[in-house]
Amino acid sequence: MASRPVFMPAFSGQQLVQERSFDFPWAPGFAEVQKKKNVAALHNAARRNGIERILEISSKSEEELGKRLSAFSLKVPLNTGKFPLESVYQGSKTFERRGPFPEVFQMTPREAKRFIREVDAGNLVRFELEGEHFPLSPKNAFYDWLYIRSLVEHADWIEKNVHYDGFTDIEFNPAKQVNCQARAFAEFLSLLSRSKLKEAAGNFYAFADMLSVV
Image (cartoon, rainbow, N blue to C red; front, side, top):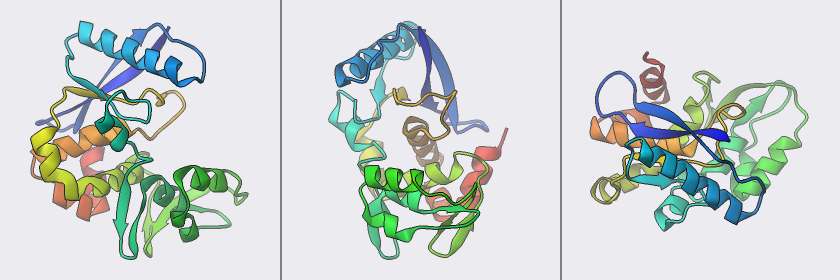
């Protein structure tokens, strides 16, 4: 058995996202068919508990929309152009002895992750992007902020065409990881519904404050 979360946008209240975790039988293995079995099992468990329309956001999604909303598919607009979200996130990392690494922006997401894994430069101390410094706390704020920025220009289309109750990312294990594209998309929908999207996308600290509210 395994337990994984489903993230739902919160259209009112202090929190941007509601999170509910469900137990389901885990199909071990790295093959795509196994991962898709786990997606189906998680979604079935959530439906039995009242969450009907669910979208997997990852390369393992059965729906094209879920694949296109993956962080590996999205691009972040910067002053010098648009670059893969994951590559910008990795290249913005600043360690005790080295960083940031803007040259990484040009790499594919997998190349960027491999490059940063091999950097021996001490502990991660902050993120740095386009001359600005960004803190490590809240832990998922910088990643989620980049994700939200990547979708702003598509907000009208998303508002008209994306109608789901919850979102999952089968690769996300909350016991081991911090960043989750399914949670970031649920945050995006909450901000959009509250007319806070432009404020959050345009100001990291405004967005971080929204995440920090308890």
